[in-house]
Image (cartoon, rainbow, N blue to C red; front, side):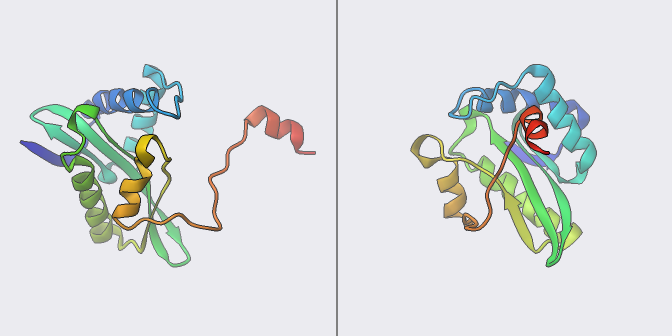
Length: 157
């Protein structure tokens, strides 16, 4: 039986492996290492442990989500940073259950007004088409921007 619960420090290595498997084997091909994926999971666990949830099938972590709260002009916003499910457990509503638990918890604890996140269009428009189906929309006037730190410093005069 699949359960959704708060992550513990012992869950982080399994979360990091799922993250590596997903981001190193999709259109993004980001090059996550064991070290870097463990570091990002540890970072978010320390940042906001009450908003780091795992989905477990017995003791095996099969999915996770981590986030943080950001105060904003319209109230607290949930910054949904990551939502990942092991490829063998997709299409079983694991992501839906993780997201619902996350949003309900953030609503109860922090009275959030908005949920923010980033995603991409991969194969078959997934995962964006899933987010769109449950009510997320692209924000027309906002862009995800990125710069190489060395190039940025060279360009700033």
